[in-house]
Structure formats: C-alpha cells, structure tokens
Length: 407
Image (cartoon, rainbow, N blue to C red; front, side, top):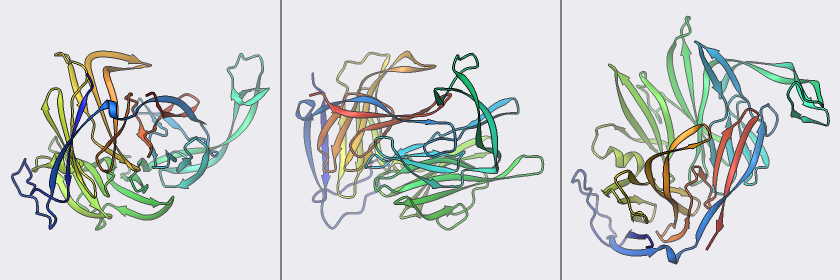
C-alpha cells in the first residue's frame, strides 16, 4: 500500500487562525485565509536514491585544501581539535570550518578547492617548525610505515601551534539566502588556569565577505550571560536566527533561546514558557498517534500542514519519527523513518535500526515534487543532494550523496 500524505494549505485568503496551546488569537490579516486539503500518493512523483561519491580527501596540514589538527593529553584526558562543522549553500558550494588553521575553506560542489576565509578560531602562539616524515620514494605524497620497502625520510615544514584556548571556533551554518553564520567563543582564565568568563560572537558573511560581528554584551545579542554556556546557533531558513543557551544555576540546567530577525533581538524564550517548543523551531510537530505525525510551519507566503503515516505496519518495538522541515534553495525537505529497538553496528558505532527511511521534497507551494528512498544523515544543497564529513588518521573525507532517479 502506498503512503498517502495529506497536505493542508493555508493560503492568504480565508480563515481566522487561533493558537491552540495558549488559546490566544493570532492577529487577523487584512486578507482572510482559506484552508484547502490535498492528498498526494507516491505514485505521482519521481522517486530517487542516493549514490555516494567521495569528493574531498583533505590531508592534515596547512596548505590549500588541507586541514589542521591538534591534540594533547590534559588532565589525563586526550583533547583533540579537528574540523567538525560543514555547511552547504543552495548551489552546492561546501564550507568547512578548519578551526586549527583559523579559516573557513570553500569548495565547489565537486570538491574543488576555491578559497579560504580567515577567521579567529584557535588562538595561541604559531611558529614554523620542521619534522621528519616517512614517504614512498615513488610517490612522496603518500606516507608509509617504517618497514615499507620504498620508504624514504624527508623533512617537512609545518606551522606549530601552542593554543591558549582563549578563542575557539564552534560551528558554521548557512541559511536559505546563502548567508553564512560563524559562531565562536572567547574565554578568560585566572592565574591558576580556571575559566572565569566565556562570551560568544556571531560573525555574518555575505558573498564570502564579513559584513558584521555580533557580540554578547552588545544591543543585538544583549548581556546578562555570566552563567551561560554555548550550545549552538541555528538559522531556520526563514530569516530567523536562533541562539541556544544553557543556564546552570543551583545545580539545575535550563534552556533558553534568543530569536533574531534582521540581526536584531526579537524575543528571549525560556524553558517552561507557553509555546516555547513552537517558537524555538518556528514550526509545530504533533503526535496524533504512534503512527501518525503532523507538521505545521510557515514560509514567507504560505502556511502548510503535512500529515505523515508509515508505509509499513508497526509493532510495540517500533516508533515512527518525522524530522523538522529544512528549507534550502527552492525546496522544503522533511525526513521520515521508523526506528526499532534493535541495534545495528556501523563501524565502531552502534545505532538503533532504522526502517522505511525517506526524504520528502516539497516546493514553496506545498506540492510534493520528489521522494528520496534513503535516510542519509547529512546537509542538503538546493537540489536535495546530501553531504557528510568525517575525520580519519590521515585527514578529512567529505562524501556527496548524489540524488538519482530510480523511477
């Protein structure tokens, strides 16, 4: 049986809306809102699958297309800093935060290196040093073990870093308008090395150029953050930027989110306030039943309500889940899957088994225009291709999951 997706369109010509959780009426628009309902089956749209292709294999180093790594044992614990944040714009250009080398590297959709954008992300002393590396004499770019028959030793210069951890890069994100946001923290320490203060900054880039720095303590991000620690910044793809924080006080942790619009603080939202979940994500996700989920959210022109059901029967060990909407380019992406209690080992990591994984692609009118039969975790470009990054002993690998039609 094909899964049927019910889509409720809220266009700007009908109904008076009311917020359900608080009972507070939403302001009536000068143009009324009408409600229409459409049922779409999978037979009406093209179906795709992902084909993985490695497009970036960056070695550890500080040259173009290479990535920095730093590690040391501190307080009997191994501390490592490596690239861990990747974002993709609507055209498929790839941005990777290379924090040890204090830059954001840009690659095209095929993995070709384009440029580096300088940022502050790993403060400390830097100086040129030299080391000996073992390489293949016929291919000096390839490292080899000590007993390799073609091994030769060569001298290689590199930039040595002695970090002071006063400035650390956290993550990068790109919104639907291809604006890039970079988040970092600045820390202060006492004479014994204990951290006494941490403040955050958000840097806004447009067309790869820095246009604004927003700091804690300034009007746009405000102050009063002495007891806060970073969690993340997230743009929702509709012009809003969310700054997530945690407050630790008297042994109790609470979550707070600040919503920005046009780089101006609109509202602070604390855990426990009415409708905080809706406000934090700018969408509502409802559990109608164990196998029926609804998502409602707004774009600049319309509001949509999507209703999802799994296409396989569920037993007591299964749960049906649906992701939040993601807007990129001209499309809206929503993922759905069934998760079981069974653990599947992938590499060194064990995760719960997922079944019936699909990604649904809608246009801005709410029309279902494609289904990807895959649940690849990654970041979308404007065409629905996904990207994933991992680090290895030799460097950074980025895989592009290319969307290809199967029917």
